[in-house]
Image 1 (cartoon, rainbow, N blue to C red):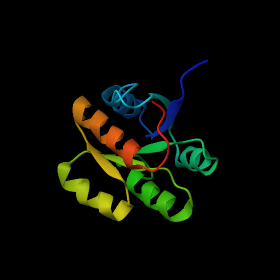
Image 2: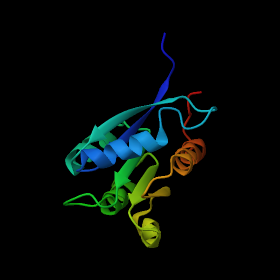
Image 3: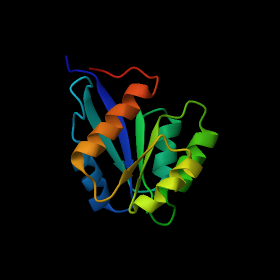
Image 4: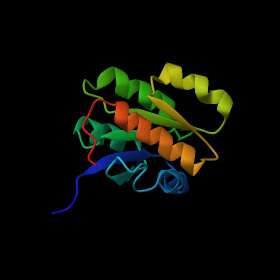
Length: 135
């Protein structure tokens, strides 16, 4: 029997950005949390489909994605999905963190990604999400 995992949806139109996010966070961001299973998507339609179907425990969105950025997608998810999973938005500049307030994101990652900070941020979001987190 395999241990339970947390499904993390990672969205960017650029595969290298998705890879950087996954690499920075790792498969187990904290000892008290279970392993993460990543689902990578490259379109907003895929994000909406996965979240609407309830297949994501956490959503990480690239704020610089094209043609629709992750901040707009975050705001859409938070306003349209009744039981929306927590959302983390990644941005390229620290000065863009204020936009996360508008996007209603639960947390922000800033590039270049620091693996310790990224893992800690995701772990904290998972702990405070109100959903059970497998250990």
